[in-house]
Length: 210
Image (cartoon, rainbow, N blue to C red):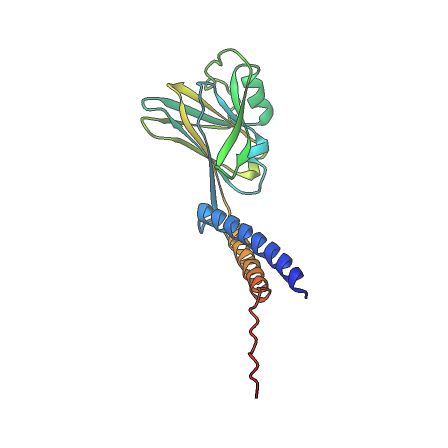
């Protein structure tokens, strides 16, 4: 392979390998050996938070929903069918979780509706409910066998400090490690090509007259 081609290919492989290695290590560090991914949102208002089936049922894994009240507050959480949950919330002000972002490990949210939402705990459409108070979070595990399912979180007193969604899949950690190893291989291959294509000094032997 010509020297210039070696340098170009080596540089591309080295840069690509470095990027893949960093990404793989970053994901492996955040996921841990158990492959646990936790995403967080900090609601800024007292509106109820809707976690729809498009988020909860997007994988075949269990999802843990955790809502923490503000100090001195109380949060109420319930699961229901998507149509029932949307009918109860209606057009009142609420926040909807629309997806996740792995870079800051945050939940993407958007607000909609207007007007205060009445207490939702008295409605009889809920499949199961849980309450968190006195510094204790409300936690609910969503099983995919019950899909489709939507979760609603409402502050019964005070406000909602944080909402967390957690997925766990060990294969995610393994995939991150494999990505890092592939990146390391490409990085070393690129470095090897660059080293072999480095400029070499030429030495000349002085001629001695007889």
